[in-house]
Length: 362
Ligand SMILES: Nc1ncnc2c1ncn2[C@@H]1O[C@H](COP(=O)(O)OP(=O)(O)O)[C@@H](O)[C@H]1O
Ligand SMILES: [Mg+2]
Image (cartoon, rainbow, N blue to C red):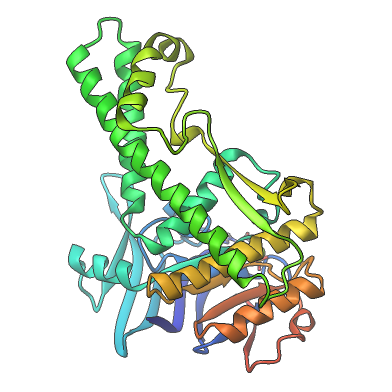
């Protein structure tokens, strides 16, 4: 289990030199718009592989007019302390994120860090999860899967690469049939794995939601499903391969592969009756919180992973029920929480001891 003891930000976003020590349980950042609350969550989320919660270009992280940033954190993993540093390196005019663990740059260290830390994230745009594009929902689901399976991104990236490769071959007027056959097999292999992982994950979240329903007095029943023209339980390698083979000409015209997990959507059905997109904004936030609660339960109980929760602007639009849901999470799980909101008063319902930080960039 990983716990962040502190973070020091140097020339990171709007921070010149800033340090905060964290509580092991509940940390609440408040302050006016633009003071840097999301930037702090972003800095925390960068302590892992990847580009952080904003998925931004690394150069945007450097404070304007400066040359580099430094995030420094004291991280506790299974009672051992590690000194984490994150900064950028410019190689042939390309900026790269560098992480060191006790000043060690090796791949093994980074793997160790990645295996030890996992984030569960709420961002304000997730309130509109069911109004957003299918790709937003796919990414949402993929992040959940990734938080319990840290090689999942590699699978997604490999799959995307094979799609690009197939398209390149199709656009080339003289196909190399051997290469095309090979790539299509690879697509089926990877695509099936993604379908299965996503489908299994949704099933697992559905089961947990059902099971938690009484304990948390959920107002409705929620069931999530993959919506996909190509995928059903009986889809197998041969069928998938044949579909790809038969769609070469139309895919060539279309300029890409029309079927596969990169085209899936996720629907949430309420009370076996209607889609979550019909709910009010506040209710949709409830649905997202329910999913995150179930995900937290999944990670802790089935994966033996203690996630760190980063919940940005969590208290806006929270009705009493949503507040209770958030409180239940705080009381139920012995994990580290980082919450943000514009006003301290918005968090007065949180009774547990918590550390409040009035953020003022310096
Ligand atoms: N690279 C950067 N250099 C300097 N300031 C930045 C940089 N990137 C973002 N900012 C500033 O950070 C502020 C936004 O911080 P943010 O954490 O999103 O605020 P909030 O507290 O509302 O979440 C804005 O004022 C923005 O101009
Ligand atoms: Mg913000």
